[in-house]
Amino acid sequence: MTMFSVRNLSLRFGGVQAIADLSFEVAQGEVFAIIGPNGAGKTSVLNVITRVFDPSAGSVHFEGRDITQLARHRVVNAGIARTFQNIELFEGGTVLENLLLGRHRFGHGNFFAQWLWTPGVRAAEAASQAAVEQVIELLDLAPHRKSPVAGLPYGVRKVVELARALAARPRLLLLDEPSSGLNPEETRDLAFWIDDIQNDLGVTVIMVEHDMSLVSEAADRVLCMNLGQRLALGTPAEVQSNPAVIAAYLGA
Amino acid sequence: MTTVIQLTINGMAIGAIYALVALGLVLTYKATEVLNFIHGDLLMASSFIGWGLIVVLKWPFWLAVLATVAIAMVFSWVLDARVMRLIVGQPQFAGVMLTIGIAFTLRGLVSMSFGPESRNYPTPWTNQKTQLGGVVIADLSLVIVATALLVTLALFWFLRRTTLGVAIQAASQNQLAAFLSGIRVKRLTSLVWALTGGIAALCGLLLAPTALVDISLWFVMIKALAAVVLGGFGSIPGAILGGLLLGVIEQFAGVYLPDGYKDAVAYLVLIGVLVLWPRGLLGDAHGRRV
Image (cartoon, rainbow over all chains, first blue to last red; front, side, top):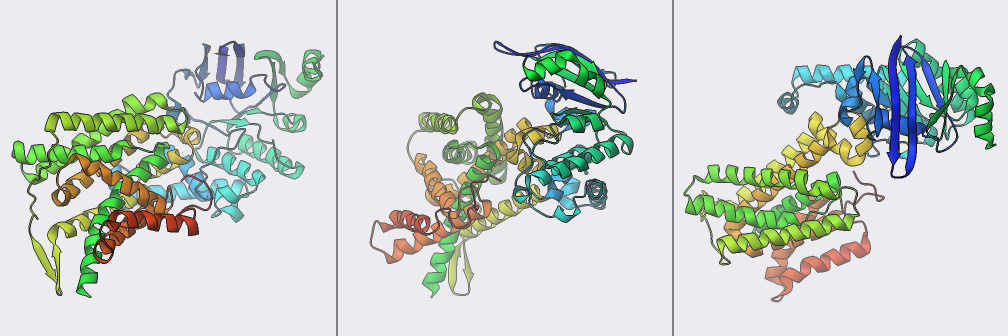
């Protein structure tokens, strides 16, 4: 069943065509990878979906609803969360605080109740704490719970970002190069987590990724982009053996 | 001994104003990275508006205070939503130049519509004094300190406890991540402007009864800027500490040092502190903005 689709999407910055008439569909529960050489427009696709950029043409549909013109702050409420290629954390906070901010979309009582710290507000706050603890356990972040994110190693910061996205309880998770900057061991953990996210949490995943071993392991289907266009679409094995894909990567 | 206590209390009163003005500056700076030079002139304009409402229109004092604060808040909100938003993404000096320009315009408008002469308005505390163990304190000073304390505590609680306050902090640290966590960043920015505008109005209304309603009231902004730097740029507790210190130092310098040192001493201390602690008294360890 199609959960998410991009239809005839184009994005143009002046003379640069970042995305050109791109269409694809993602099924419920699928892990969908987008690969392609640098500058192929992969991250731009994620940025259009999360409304960082306005597309020049085309539309984006999620759960039967057109989200092309959604306000940027409503994306997460629609059920879509993401991570970034260059980690975007709240640098002044701890791991726990960052994850709790991921829960912002869930109400925590009204303004005046919060001033008074009423039982209702405390209960909502406790519920968010519990939800965040589940994510912390899933992603093995317990040792860093109280650490300020600014001082954490790169690999852990990437996991914190993933955890914050999961704390928002998305139905669609967008990962932008989740393995970049990770060592082989961390990348292996990541493959397991993506598997957990897909199978245990039932979250659909779209990930932009360069590491082909991770893509082969985690993804159900792969879209290869080049110069903003669709080059190939299929299972990891099919796409990897596609002559056009090999040519694009080797620059032939 | 009584003189020392007397001077300290008077210094705290004026320092509390510096601290509040500094707090407004730091809040806007942290939330929007704009050093808001309109702050001082909004404070001055508010004292004129307060005078107009109390003396000319004969409104009750409290109603006039509420109305003035509301006017300043709406003005600041609109300023952010309609004007400051135009230069988002421009270099920092663009914001500085724009606010300086608006500040001068505001000053000109006040001067044209009210005239340049100083004036005053009565408050419920004018000419009232309280005796505390041999020390005589003007009630106005007590009200100033109490208001500053209340506003600071309310702000602290607001930023710590409410979703809105936490969202403001989040947006000031990472706008993109804030947007995609579901935070209405633009609206919050305007809210911060409105809040600081309201604080400026309150400061103007508190300062005017002791310093007269005058165009030169905007000058308190320069002192507040010194307080911000003294405390460590971008630190809220630092701004408060810096403001209080500056106020007390000025009072003592006015009495114990030769004429003319009163205004200079604060800056001498500032230079001294910056030589010893280049980041200010409570500055962040590195250039992080929180």
